[in-house]
Image 1 (spheres, rainbow, N blue to C red):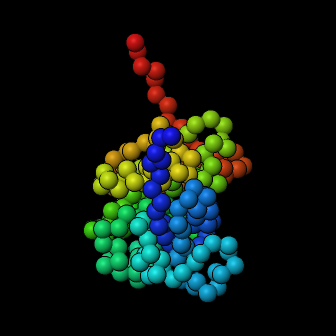
Image 2 (cartoon, rainbow, N blue to C red):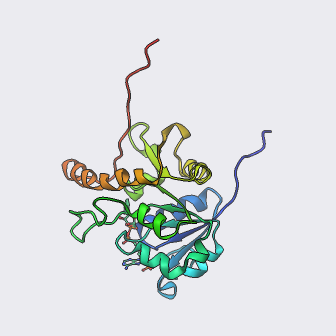
Image 3 (cartoon, rainbow, N blue to C red):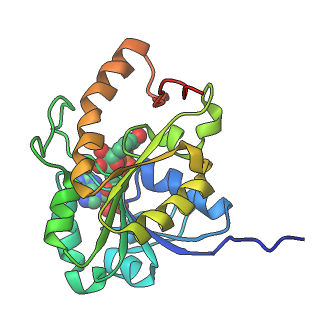
Length: 217
Ligand SMILES: NC(=O)c1ccc[n+]([C@@H]2O[C@H](COP(=O)([O-])OP(=O)(O)OC[C@H]3O[C@@H](n4cnc5c(N)ncnc54)[C@H](OP(=O)(O)O)[C@@H]3O)[C@@H](O)[C@H]2O)c1
C-alpha cells in the first residue's frame, strides 16, 4: 500500500463565524487538529468546535487562518502580537467591505497586503475569498470544476496552503497561483463582482472557472 502524504496540522482559525466554522469542520473531518480563536471564548462554548482566546489559538497553531471582518483584522492581529506571528503561515480569507457591502475598505490595495506590511516576517497567503463559505468546503457540489486562487510572496507557504486546499476538496488542477501578495487585491476586489453575480443569480453559492483556448496541436 502506498504511504499517505497526509500531514496532520494544527490549524488555528481566527473568528468563530460562517467561514471559520465551515473550514474548521471540513479540515477536522480531513484529520487536522482545529482550534477557533475568539474574543469571547467563554461565550462560544456551544458551537460544537474547540474554541480558545486569540493568543492561545495562535500559540497552538502551525497555521493560522484569518476569518475575521477585513476592516478589523489588522488590529486584531496586532492584539495577538508580531512575536506570535513570526514565521507563521497565515492564510487570509478576509475581505474588507463597508457595512452595506457596496465598497471596499482597501480600494487601492488589499487586506492581505496590509497584513503582510504590518507583519513582514509572517508568511501571508490569500485564498478562498472569491466564493462563499459553502463553496469553499464543497467544490464538488458545484456544477463542474471551478477555480480557487492563491496569492503570496512565499512559495513554501503557498505549497502548504495548496495541500490544505486539497484537503477541502480542491484538486491541484483547480488551484491557480496568480503571483505575489500584491495580486491579493484582485481576489479581494472580486467581492464587488461577486455581489453583482449573487444579485443576478439570486444565490450566493457559486464559483467561477478560468477557461482558456484549447492548445493548438
Ligand atoms: N461568509 C462568506 O461566505 C465569506 C466569503 C468570502 C470571504 N469572507 C470573508 O471572511 C471573513 C469572515 O467572514 P464570516 O462570514 O465568517 O464573518 P462572520 O460570520 O461575521 O464572523 C466573523 C468572526 O470574526 C470575529 N471577530 C473579531 N473581531 C470582530 C469584530 N470587530 N466584529 C465582528 N466580528 C469580529 C467574530 O468572532 P468572535 O466574536 O468569537 O471573536 C466573528 O464570529 C470576512 O472578512 C469576510 O469578508 C466571507
